[in-house]
Length: 218
Image 1 (cartoon, rainbow, N blue to C red):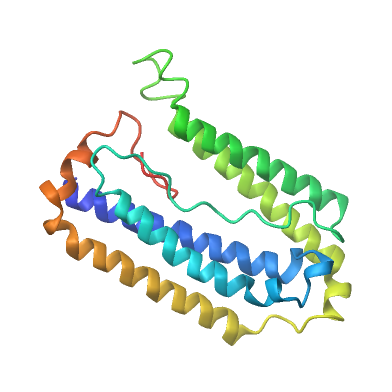
Image 2 (spheres, rainbow, N blue to C red):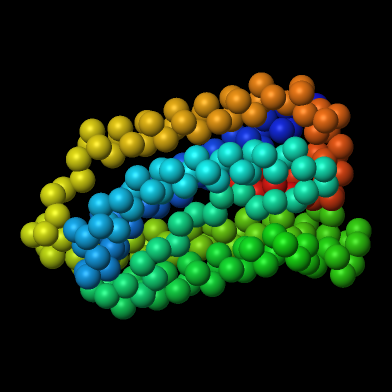
């Protein structure tokens, strides 16, 4: 794969994870918002702020590909309403597990353990990139279970205080975010030939086992 193609794949990866964070905001805003914030200012602007955040994260993550030797994390999924009032105990436990695995994912991403302790022994199996993907998947599982628990346990309470999520508003926001992130990716892709050295040096200097997806530049 050429250096340019690798950069474009990373750009798309960042955009996908930024849109995932927006999807989390839809779910949290609809089902997991703390009771004292429901219908408040934060609740009204929560999803628009998440959409704007997706643009910022995609832009900064794409820009990080131009930094020589710079390993930067991509946009992180929004972890919100941890331990919110009104949530069932099962949901709170799910958010706790999600937080633990999110922190562990970040630790593995930045520490490059265990391959740093035994170079060459984890080139194919057991290196940090594989482990952080496993932790990310487990964290997402607990996140979804927690949101589903909140949706089941709080449906009647929320129905009396909030209008049901509207398709045009949800899909309209998601569509605009998709177009905006695609425009950002397109702009950075068009700028690749003008980057110093084609930014190839930064891509080729990645450590073995560091290439991958899920919104993380290694």
